[in-house]
Length: 151
View 1 (tube, rainbow, N blue to C red):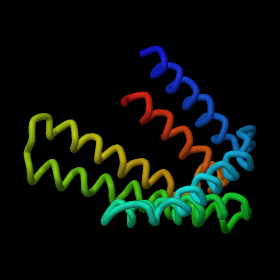
View 2: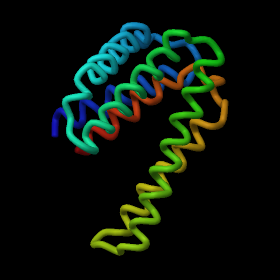
View 3: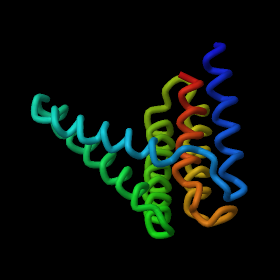
């Protein structure tokens, strides 16, 4: 529980740092680690079996593409990343809502609320306010820390 609270606190600090448009988050080393992770995943992807192999190729390619967009930086890279992350959150939230409505498992209403939250996050990524896409990666790191605290 202590690690979850620390993860949320760190996520709040990182998220609020990105809101003013001046980033203190070390984005380049983070992108380099992400590129290394993507390349390492691609290097071992062939060892998987069936669907596992395909998922490794997708993960490695996605990590490499995202890291390269961050390293390229600038207005266009941030915009592309924001659209990619927004679309991923939108699709995941919509699928979560549809699944909860169709299957109606125990606590399906909580799943619908979680899907609605993901759609709200997607809208946040799509719109340029408050920093005109400059904090896209920082926001994703913060949201990752928020979600990691709940698991």
